[in-house]
Image 1 (cartoon, rainbow, N blue to C red):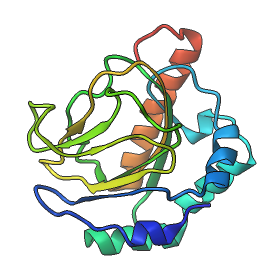
Image 2: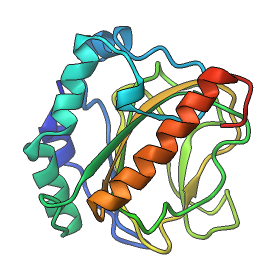
Image 3: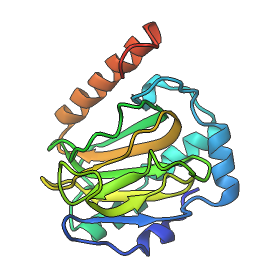
Amino acid sequence: MIEFERIAGAEVQHQPFSFFMARDVLPTAALGEVRRDFPAITGSGVYPLKELSYGDAFARLVDDIKSRRLEEILEEKFDVELADKPLMITVRGHCARRDGRIHTDSTDKIVTCLLYLNDSWAEDGGRLRLLRNGHDIDAVIAEVPPDGGTFVAFKRSDNSWHGHLPFEGPRRYVMFNWVRSEAVLMKNIGRHTLSARLKRLNPFAAG
């Protein structure tokens, strides 16, 4: 489903940290199928795959995300070895107004990727901003509208700052991270699983 050549052809920017963006990595028909088969998520926060039910098209997208082809592209672009690193896949369906605070991602992560699955995005809030520092949301290096089929990736570092202006409502994406060890993977999946189950018990809980 993923047009890997669009990702392979994207230009990487290496300052102040390494990142790139590619548009239309899902053809229109494939995007429609994935949106149709997207998991039913109403709560905020990210959910591990094992806590979700979804259709065949979304499952095929997940297979592409797990492919060695995508891994090879990211290895080349970021000059990292990923083949022996665990892959963590999580899904978001809804954004809360408190989401989007500036952060770098944890040191557990090596590479972070986001594939957006929304309609065309008209809102000012909810647009991912890659930033020059950890305190000014307007210190923008690049802004990524979460339009359907847009893909963004960065190599995690101590200055890989990112966040977005507040938005509340549906905001769909798949996030996938290569992490440093199986122990790290289990820790993070366990945390996300507990959070997902608590939300099912109390959908109004903070997420």
